[in-house]
Length: 615
Ligand code: F6R
Image 1 (cartoon, rainbow, N blue to C red):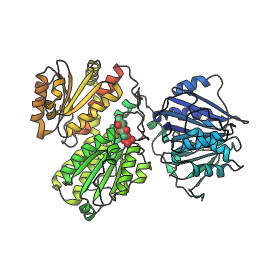
Image 2: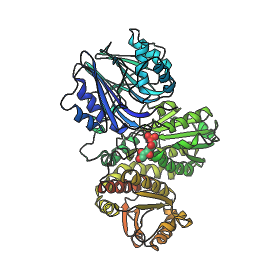
Image 3: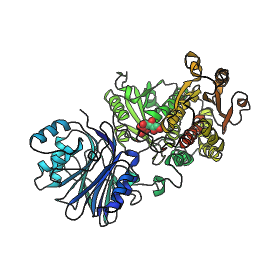
Image 4: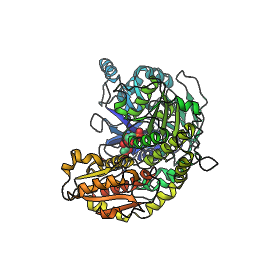
């Protein structure tokens, strides 16, 4: 039985300053993790004061405007409901009956119902429907004067996934935190320490962090952090120094994170390429992998498994790997993979792609493939994330934090890593001519500059977006790599502008969907792939014959496309393999400006959250 709440952001502060400003600021940087209710708890010197409310963080800030709690230790939480309704009393933090114990939680306590029934029969009363409240009540029940010991007792009772922070009026000089299958970071400050679900919450305060691993528990005071393993033995944790600057986690002057992140792409791609092109200037090196030709030979089949946008990147990756190495690749949606009894064995490599590294379905698929004996490799943007740690090897995209719910720079950097990987594998297996590999690498190196050039003139796209913003349905068509990009363009438009969109392999339209094309139906046609270019033009003619309104996305040297479409958008000329990296950008912008015209909340679209840690 699942609990109600699973996707949330957590913060904690203990130090010499007033905790409340940090808690509210930290939560505002974690709103992408959840944003339907928020709360804080602060020890005021005598008791713990809890303030919480349904709605955006702004609602909590307004509530606290005239009488904010003040004290040197506190915790905070921003929530995203998955089952129950957002409400004041279901918001975190949760307290024990006697108010002496406070808990904030991200995850699911799976056995909470039986625990709750037992506690109810012993006279404990509950104020919320949450699974989390059980943890606070258990703390009260088992407390014998030793806070850490009680936390350990409670952890032995609860089952599920969690990151948890505990605070107690009995020992207000410390916060205790722990995690299993959900992220938790400790920031090391000057006479203050911080706790958060993710780095953006603490980056304005410190770059020195500990990234907790599953089963570790930290006892955090204002001037010490002691970390113990699951057996209670102290461990000497290595510090992780965040190299992102503080601004990288903020909007940097843009109106929304999404548009900032679209413009981050030249840098994100440059960072992702850094150190991965050899000194000779034309070979790919992956120190993280250091595979040999023999190891490569053993791989008979590859699976690429992911969700949403990361899955679309995986479709592009399939094309690269198959074309360059001739090893067969299957792509799978992570939520399907483990339920379809996949035929996976030790001669298979499973590649998971995940921006957050925390997506529950992707993590579960990875665990299943490991159980079946496959080698595993993660492509992820978050260092030391659950997926990075679970996989045999990890290749990072260095896109920096992606805050907008709609993924943009993570997608382009995922494609870059997949192409580098395909070239790396082809180098080992000798399956593609060296000359061709050199050509691809030369073009890879030009990508930051090409993206930069593309982003210099986006005015026509703004105009089209305004024109198309009133549409109810939009179609995206393309063949081969253009089809994979069409899928991503369609997802972007749907999720942030709420315009219904569908992507079709262009040759498939006439098998049914053409019936939906009538006068004025917007169709975005991608035509960047030379070997199917003529075929795509024929498909464009099919929709034009039904008076569709067509935007063509083509390379800048294409002198032909304008004869076939109503508007043409040009991307800088590039190798066909790199075209997806460029072609997706006008589609990201189209979605962004269409959403703006429709007055949508671009960074936080309805019903969605950034990190999907539920099945
Ligand atoms: C859409 C989007 C999602 C994610 C998906 C997987 O813009 O961002 O479709 O791609 O939820 O998330 P990660 O990559 O974190 O595993």
